[in-house]
Length: 111
View 1 (cartoon, rainbow, N blue to C red):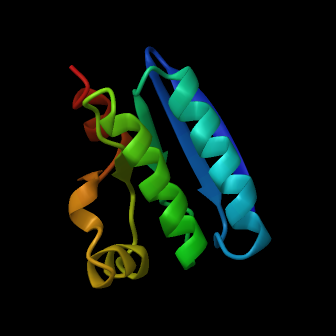
View 2 (cartoon, rainbow, N blue to C red):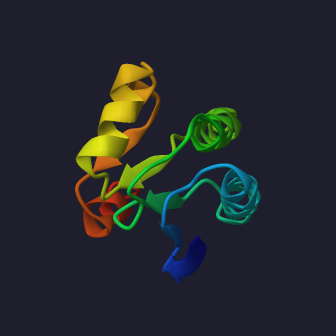
């Protein structure tokens, strides 16, 4: 798995490429938490290239959104495929995130 990070204006986008499972979950968590801290809460995870996330990856998303909640913010997710969306729904955590179809919509939500 590779994680691309882009800053567009005041918004940081993380775009993992590949399944996030096992040891990749640790790498993902580290990159996500660093981005959340650097971006002043304006962080979007673009999961359009992620076919699957394991429970450790889902926990990383929850940890990031918990950290953002302290500042009254919510982690934005975009580009979720059906499998990842279903994982969020089946685990009952989809409501903890703001979910958008694409990065443009997610970025505009910060206005």
